[in-house]
Image 1 (tube, rainbow, N blue to C red):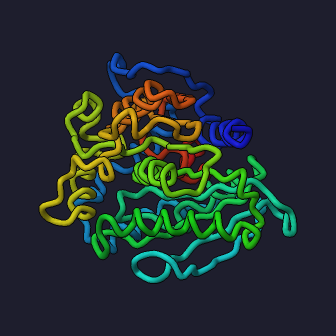
Image 2: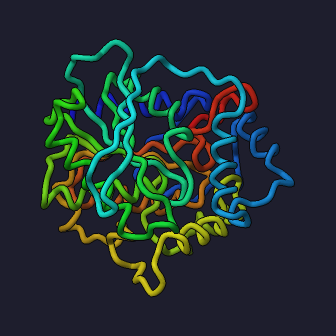
Length: 332
C-alpha cells in the first residue's frame, strides 16, 4: 500500500501537471457536454487533421506512426539506468523486457513495477513509452520492468496475457536480479495494458505472486463498445471507436467469446475481484474508454478493493505523448 501512495503521486505528476487539475470521483462522468481539452493538447489534435486514420493503415505503418509521434522533436528524458533483457518465459519461448531504474541506484533494492503498455495490442513498444518509464522510475524511486509482449495480429489472445503473467512471475521469483523488493511489487499499464493489469491481478490472486498494488491508466475493460462515452467520442478527439474495433479484430481469434472476463475484465464477478490489491484507476474525460474505466473502478470498490480514481480533462493516451516541442501539455 505504501508503494501505491508513492506511485499514485508519481503517476499523477506524469499524467496531469500540464492540465492543472484533476477531480476525484467514484461516479461515471456522463454529464460532460462536449470535448474540453487543454489548449496545447487541442493543438496536437488539430495537427492530426487530414492524416490517414490509424485503422486504415497497414499494421507496420500504423506502428511507425506511433513511434514517430513519440520521438518527434527534442524531448528531454530523466536520467535513468536502462537495460534490455530477454527472458525465456511465455508461450512463444521468450519475451523482451526493459529494466528502468533511477540513475545511480545499482546495488539498491527498490520497489518494483511490472508495466504493460497500451497501443491496442497492435502498436507500441519501449520506444513509445520510454519517457513515461523514466518519469515513473525517477519520480517513484522504483524499478520499472517494461514488458514488450508480442503484438497482434501476429500473436493473438491469450498469448499476450500469458506473456505478461509469466514475466510477472519471473520477476517475483528472481527479484534480486532486478534489484526489486518482492514484498513491494506492483503492476501497471495503460489502455489495453490496463486490461492486462486487471486480468493478471485476478490470476495472481489465485496463483501468486502477491501484489502490493495495481495502477490502470484509462483501461480497456470490455469489448462492448456501446457505452455513453463511446457515443460521445466515437470520432475522437484521439482514440476513435473505429480504431478500437480495428484493435479488437486484430487481437481476438475468430469465434472468440469476447464476454469472457479474461477479455472483458468488467465481467468479473464481485467474488473474483474481492481481495485484489489496492488500485489506482486513472481515466480521461474525453475518451471512448472513460465509462468502462469508471465502471470497473466502481466494481472494484463494491468488491471491497481500496480505490482511487482521478479523472483528468484530456484525451486518450495524453500521458504518453512527448511534451515538447510541438505539444508541451500532451504527455504520455
